[in-house]
Image 1 (cartoon, rainbow, N blue to C red):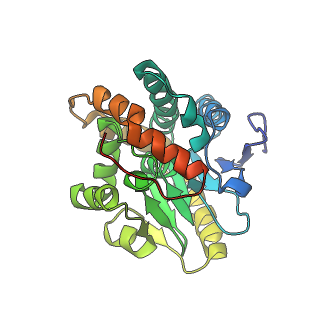
Image 2 (cartoon, helix red, strand yellow):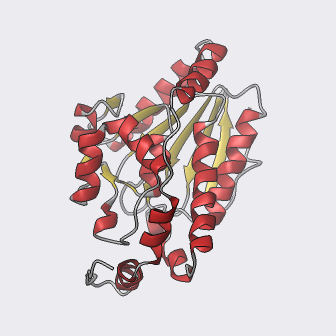
Length: 265
């Protein structure tokens, strides 16, 4: 059975047997996420949750001139942030997308290759099984680009995936982790030497997962999420970082394709 009922221009969705394939489709922008793309991802997750035929969801990026999973969010959308309420709305929209993936009743596989940056890295961290091609660049260069900070929810996701030391390294050195570094951290289940090999491996793993006991996988996913204890909120720090002079300068510099001038306020 094949279904494309949730597809949009920016997101291609198709069902192949028990697998729902969700493909980010902005290759000219390295699949950077827009709000409309995020809305379509939520719709795809809802479709999967309401369709008993689906046993696994695969997230991947459309290749353009080079492979890319998702090169963050579209930074142009940050130019309209003028208040803490604006930041809360932006974060809430992104969190809705991440929570939809994290809360899927079936396992989620992320087929990573090329840039897996910002929102792309967070989206990958919400998946259950990560597979990697040869050219992954994973991380959050926000200390070099947009000058904001991550919520405690998102830091928790990263720490669960790669641990505290690598999370600190990624953010405090604006370092992107490559395929081998992710593998050594235990973040990816398997890696391949070629881009085509990644596609073949993803099909194989999806087929294997779809053949396992669905309730075992579903209840394990839900139970793992319950292991997270309550954490203190850092909403005010997130809002301050987005609304800082440094962040405004960084967004302007990014759009003007020049290095930002940091001032620390």
